[in-house]
Length: 151
Image (cartoon, rainbow, N blue to C red; front, side):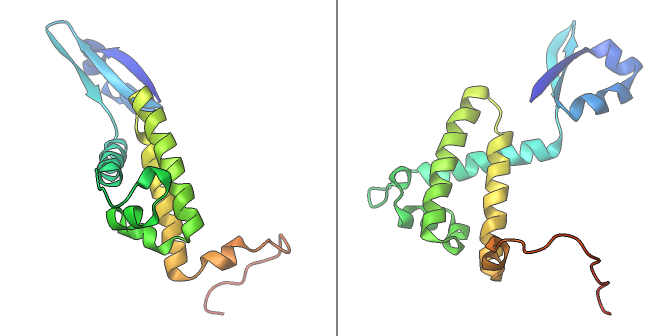
């Protein structure tokens, strides 16, 4: 994500100009007489906080489990929602998580890691609801009208 820069006085003259910039990333408000201020969307901050919390849980030292090498028990103890994932998917999740964590830390932007966690949690919810096997089947036909619910 890009960080856009804007002067404090430009922001005060036209505050609505910030909204389109926030669609693409954070906005840094430069001030002459003080430290710059950073504006960002709450959802981005929430994704970052959740990603860091889960990273700490997953990587916390535990001699009985090694989440990086795929120890299933370590992952399910730290992130209980992963219990709904099949074992192969849990191992894939850990690999993707570590890869994303490293890349995001290098960029200083954890948005992608937050998105990855949200996607995997949705996958776990699909397994928990029992709909995941149906979603994995190939689509036989495309098109046609979908009947209205309740008819």
